[in-house]
Image 1: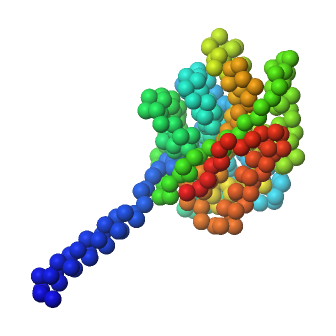
Image 2: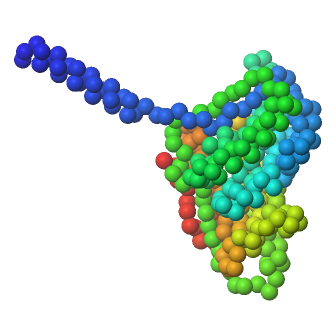
Image 3: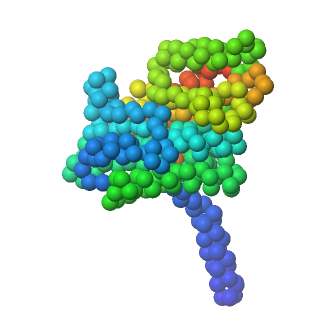
Length: 333
């Protein structure tokens, strides 16, 4: 073979190899960027939460010092402090919920606060929430205008965080594995027309809470958006009912947040949203599955992953016991 042909073959081989490497290079995507401040900032967090109304926000639930419950129940202390605040801007959420009921998966979104036990190398309080694009990608929102509306809403919250908490450091969490193609699990239940819809909803909520309690879940918060908008004289006629329950499983959360991965608390509690489209006899339910956690936070331990998915499957099973039919199941890529 002539020298020039040998050189050409080498160049082509190198080019193919480089293209193959580039095609297999995973895209790095932001899951969240938490902010931090030195020391225990519990007092400052409490003061901040007391001021969120100035930015139009309120808490659906403030689940503070969960590490105490972990210790009482499991005699394990893996963090100095961990708290969850379910945050909503009720007025600004209305147009988003009317545009897409799946925004309920982050209505509320969780504002996570934690501090590890590592006082030597990480004597900091960390706080924040999932990146807006992460939440939007999980619910599958494609519309550029509603994505901007949601992002702008969160920017107002983050501006207050910066003003009041004065963070001095940040910590990025990134992932290379794509989020599930369908990030939400969705189910539907058909029902007979009730004499009193409000009573039907109340009975359902009581049955729902009781059934999930039997499966060792707790309801960590609740908001009835239909009531909230009626009370504000704000039109919300697309739905005959719309509410969100915050679902938590202590054994599940202890096994993750209290055992080395407190940042996963940005995904919890799980906002499970329910709605009845106007004039229908269908109750819809949806929520973000744990496969989002697994991909977005790069979980590797297969035993832990299997356990997480078993709890997620138990949620579906419980809804099916209540007469729901599965419409969409989230699955990892």
